[in-house]
Image (cartoon, rainbow, N blue to C red; front, side, top):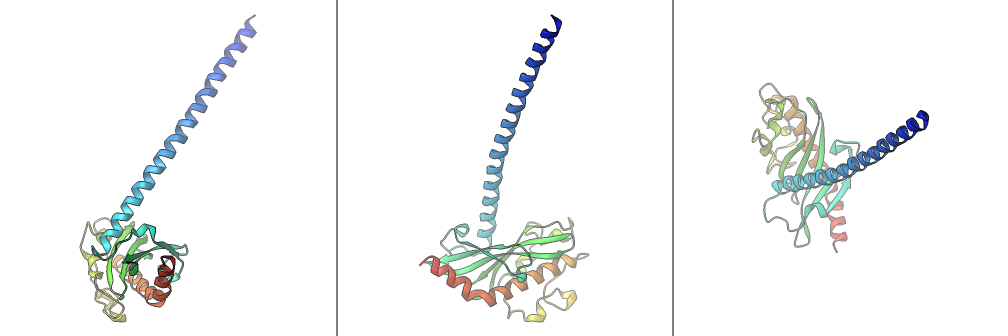
Length: 213
């Protein structure tokens, strides 16, 4: 008689454990879904804030994330496609914000947003992500230093080609005390993004006008 009792007890415990496992998996899946949505929303909000910081207020009247395209070019610093956002004013392109990568930062790749006005002048540059040394290379962040604003108003012609370097390399951009590699990488990446825009401006803006026509 003892064996059936043991079997029933084992079956009961197995059922309880099985139901618990199913409930746990369901709870984890639900939490993951909710968390993923919140993370995606937070990332989108952060991206919108970063984009809105770059372009002058009133210089565009569209939602930048709704006018995005994917670009793939070595000048943008990545083997993967990079997003770009077209700013429109009264239906006409007024600027573009390129996502670019400085692959040669001191501690790895530096992700950038580079805003370029239709006339080729830089509207602004912001750092999206980096792993540079706190207190040294992290001065590329606007929250840590105003250095990143030194790009505003610059273009391929101003400074000239040789000027697109840090002062240690006889260029026009400041470096950080004890950290030259980081600003050098950012200056190089911004210069390449300007070169890309100069070579592809007509195609970029023509495609956007066509899609909105």
